[in-house]
Length: 605
Image (tube, rainbow, N blue to C red; front, side, top):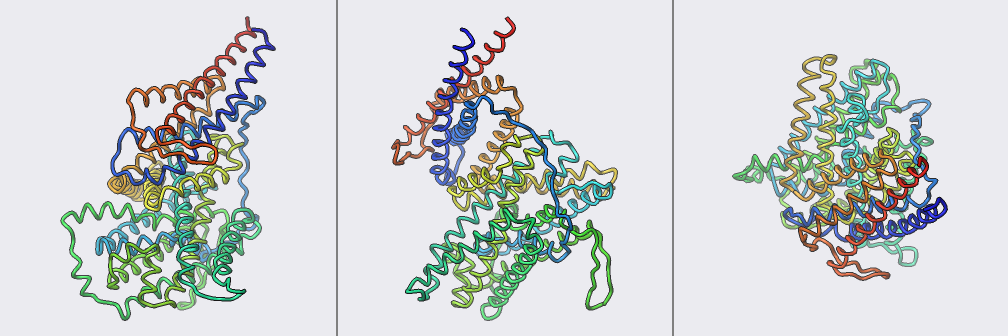
């Protein structure tokens, strides 16, 4: 075969591969959007469920690889950009506390705490207390490790970066912690989208009744709220550096309003509806220890926001002077102290509000069944006990919680994916648009249902934080026995233990999370391969996956029918289409790799 013929063959092959890749990605997205909700309802693990995850993820990833095969001039350039910080750091202690509390007191609070309080009673209070103590331990390790690096002149943005600094960017622990945080924050963002949609388009039209602008009062309010959320998101996502100080002050104001409403709501419930007799009548079940362990891991989603403080450490002043009004004495605080105090106070304030509200709900006497069936239980409780006035203030608090949860979670997820490119783990040419990939991932996850998203957020956060905290053990000689041995080992061990306990809540979520991590690391290794090796390995992987699924006669019940304007297939047809695409992609990849290998060898003979 001469050069010209070979070149034409390769170009034609890659054009066909691109078409196959586009179909694979579209089918993979349709399957994931349509099936995640049904997958989240499965109560036991089987090989069919595993095969579903592997097929859908393979379709999307390998489809993207085939799409990129046509432009032969495409090359991934690993460019490590400089990370910019604000020229004049201006955040002090109070703004940092506002950022921390705002990220912690999120919209999940309005659903999880009421449902959990009436279901588990005293167990719920104990779970919240244990989760807050774990957060205190984590904040202790975070502040110690940061202070150690800061004392040596290193500017380390906390979280997974602690693992990278301790064990290197090629460490598996670093990759898992960073990827877990990306998945967790994306899941939390998707969860916020779901319940915000429920509030905006289902609850508000039934709750508010106003007529102005020719009878379109409700629509004006709904779309004004939507516009406000979108505007806040755009300002934070694209103009954060320009409006950094204003954003921080607005966030602090929002948090003060939200915290005041939640505290006031708790005491309003305490007032006319308080009945301590209910406290003593709530018995411990026969398996209360097991329930306590499971419930603690489940509720930890309400506490991990404190670590977002470290993401803004470059915006914190190097030193501040504070005056306490009662004792009228001034104190100077360094940056490391500001971060430490703000994390501890974030955990203290957030946990106090969570526990106070949980106790008030537990003792309120509102029927358990009605709370658990309500779309937003906190709103139902307020409307039941305080009428429209109580409902109004809870709606305000919920909207603020959405503002202070969704945007930071989305930005954090995009940041984690981008850093994987900056560290040369993923292509930087892809991570430059990390927010696009994150947004698509959030939309896909949003179809999975609220319980699925809560569970995956819990598991991924606990895994990531457990690994991050364990990095403090690397500095045991420098930090000493207490800070370098006890706190990192104990806190990390307890955190990973509660991560394992989430298996008993939803084993499917644990399986899904592990598969995502394994595939992410596979992607990492594949991207590091030479082009020929990547093509041949990808093709072999797709064909082997096809053979395994076919030989074991795996049930296709986890697939759902595909019904679009272009194609209509039943569950078996959708599964067969996915397998045919894997076969076509495998053949195309192997042929492409062999053709390029032949071309290289022809140059030397």
